[in-house]
Image (tube, rainbow, N blue to C red; front, side, top):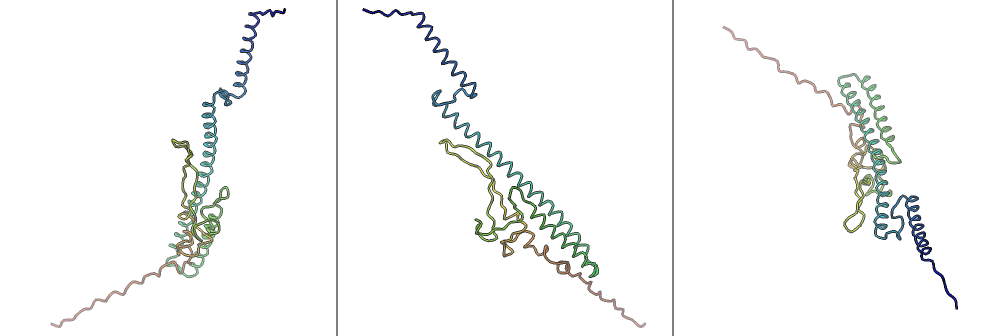
Length: 229
């Protein structure tokens, strides 16, 4: 006949040691990951919520980067438009200064106006940021535009949220490139050309742009009637 001698104190100490080791593993896991709930076994409900929030946070960071990229593109186009406005003001001053000048002086002014026009086109071509140019475009239907000469609206992601059902909703800022473009290589009509192409004042020379100087109409000479006394 055999018997087993038990030591209650030792068994209690062993249980305490196991519980201590388990708690130590939990603490070490939280320290290494920095998360109280790092896996589904810790708390399934909290783990699901935390995973979704971390994913959304990463998406918001991407939206912020997209906003910064869109803002840089807008700044580039705005700076180029400001420069174009300054050049157009110079052209207007030259055209107004040519009124009443001789033909030789008009030809010199026309050369200066032509140089300003070339500078306008170069300014539009240089307004490129991250491969996007909204001022000098090529709106071909084969490139995904509605039709030749009609540029599609450019969308910039501006917001990210979820509805009450958890579905993702994205917000956009629309840029009407068709309204701000200066040149369009695919445009064939005045309605679809850029602002500096469809305008006759941007393409004519000084002789045709300047209206003819009106000549004063001859005044009727006063007539005198002689009376004899």
